[in-house]
Image (cartoon, rainbow, N blue to C red; front, side):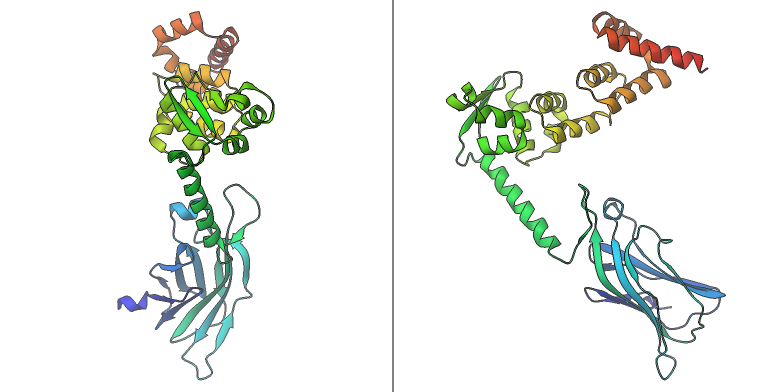
Length: 329
């Protein structure tokens, strides 16, 4: 069978797969074809009935933003003189993730050549931040480009010190920034610049508990210049700053990141951090790592030192978890 037997022809919203012959008890899967943001597949199977499936290719994009599709699908038989056409009732705003999300069971027997014709009326994605799904064909790309361009310009304002009006003094250096940007991201900064405090009068903010590099990472995050390496390097400092200046999205980003690499070398520090900054998931994960997985016995010396210097209430919680685990044995 030639490669063309699996090829799906497309326009921006239309896909057609031409099937020359399909014997009984046959399964056939098309080559991938691109519509919108996703690669798609069509399959057809004849086993008493004819089954047609449409689904997106499994990928990171599909998992993170699965398509929400509206489409009309038809089977057009070219074998008969009057081009017999079977039309599915139509699909509206159906989320498609795998090959079982749309299955069309066709009772009518089709012989000879036929075409599977799929017209995509709309494709939507759910915004990562929640809310109503948005169409990728109603300005989605323009909106995405606009946001990307604006974010890039905002980052240049910081890196090129364009019309800065405030100086951030870290422990070992200073960085020029913008009151309006800081105030829009942090209610604490907004309060500083709205009242007759020394920060407003002197046009400086002293962050003496952060190194220059950590402070640069902090401002890079605020301005949208996110850099994964510096974020990982300065997570704890960024967490402290996020808590101090009430930047909840940064605090949650640090929380999620600290969950990902708990080990015997850092678990006690992470546990203390979770307790201090009220991070329930991190605290629970550290407790589970120590008690459920028995790692508390592998770090006896470190844990004994922790008992001497750690928070009494936190230590009591650890012993409570240990006792509960013993009772469960």
